[in-house]
Image 1 (cartoon, helix red, strand yellow):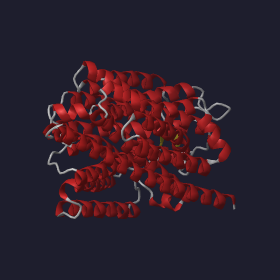
Image 2 (cartoon, rainbow, N blue to C red):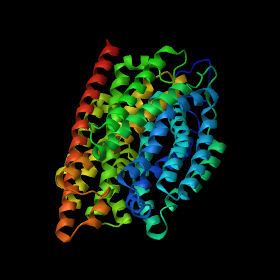
Image 3 (tube, rainbow, N blue to C red):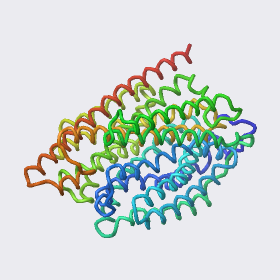
Length: 498
């Protein structure tokens, strides 16, 4: 990897990488795990939060989305700040803020307090997610970067696997707030390790943070997702939903206009002229959309409809993540990417993710066997597609903009996460409401208000039907997006060769 004269980079070996690069990778992946555990632990706590906090479905979705939306809005600004002021400094700051936010979340007394705490944690998460991938790009050369990014991606899957398991254990023995307090010792260990091992690197002439852009992007995405979440409740053509959607679209349009006009944008819109970048962008959003939206719905289905306890539900979602871990820790995912090329790896991976979603929809409505098959197939697809897309995004951006590149990658993933929860949740709620005439705001409330076993069975069947419909919507979106992304990347590679 070449380095700009203005780039203050870590020391390199004769092979082009930092002499302690693999140890450093382990340290920063520990920091990343702190963020990921919070997202996945919350999934198995949804029924507990619904019962103990009397939270509605919209409350639960905002508990999920508040973190994602704040983080998405700040990732690009955090990436700019990391490039200019130092990636190690921002990494340690993110760990500290995230730890404090976890403490506040664990002691929350109402849905509103928890949503606010989650939004605060999003600030720390933004600082962490931008600097982690930026450091990976700085300490590994081009030959080893694909393998390093595959291992970095595997930690995401470990978070998916460990989060539900840890969450299930905690909920079986403690109150729900403990799922947030578990983050604190991990954050402390991460701080100590980062301070001791991770080298500082920064771009001396880094761009100024674009605070106006961060505000515009956060407001725009929040308004759009709010419209999606409240659409089933108020009606898609209601004034509240339409106004929110129009405000979101208008503000995002202002964001694009602002970024094109200022001297130091947090997102250089000229990146979107690069077909390689655009293809990877499309794929990154849709794989996060399908995986996170699916997991959000599955944890509810396993507990509410199939009757599993939180720990059992967590164990039954683990095969998705364990499949990714198995493929990437053995190096099979990275080897296949290098052998068949990025476009083919993304096309195959996204097709498998789509097939997994379809299998869950068609075979997993009333039993776990179909879900297991779908989760394993999805895991194989994620193992192939996510590292390939992350590497494509980072390789399309200059090394001195590594923080910005990581911010873009993280923004896309978080936006896909929030969009997946919102869209697939909205599809589920719409289908559920069309099949059963209930006024309750959540499935547990509807079951509690049901008159007799026959009506409860009808409500559960309606929820299962809504799950099937939402998973099929996700499958179609992921398949179409994957094929488009692969085609754009293939065209970009041919243009570079020419």
